[in-house]
Image 1 (spheres, rainbow, N blue to C red):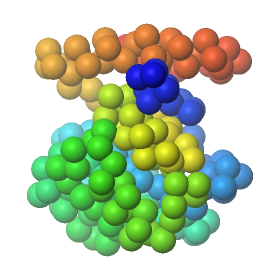
Image 2 (cartoon, rainbow, N blue to C red; image 1 turned 180 degrees about the vertical axis):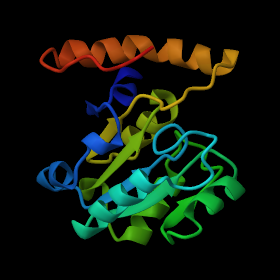
Image 3 (cartoon, helix red, strand yellow; image 1 turned 90 degrees about the vertical axis):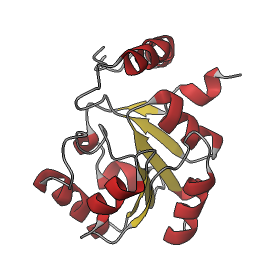
Amino acid sequence: MLKKYLIPDRIFKDIYEITPEFLTSQGVRALVLDIDNTLVTYDDPEPTPPVLEWFRAMNAAGVSISFVSNNEHERVERFNRDLGFYAHGKSAKPFGKYIRRAMAHMGSDESSTALIGDQLLTDIAAGKKAGLRLSLLVPPIKDKTTLFFRSKRKLELPYIAKYYKLHPEEERIWIY
């Protein structure tokens, strides 16, 4: 039963492979995004120019954006300061309370919302538990090397392997 919450719907090399065209073809008009290691590294306090351009492309296609992060409120607020999207830190993912708030803010529902993140145990599980249309995984940009994070990543490997078993036609891009 746990497996159904930890296998992503799709794996992409990075966020830039997730295009507005792909999302709209899937019926997605709203995104719930993790920040750290999904959009930028922990060292990047604000969105980088390529990330800003990706946001512009999403908005131009009518795809709404929100941030739901487990990081500190201050970090999330600084990242979002010039953007003005719905954003919440200390979100306790995989619980879905703030994902539901993000959807309410964007005027979307489960059938039109996707989540993008870099961790199965928090991001993908949260999207799946919330019943979102798609839970999309990207490899971490620059992963932390603490024992805690290395252990979490090892726990994820069997579910990544299961994803590729279910999708043998896809190129294996997972890198740990």
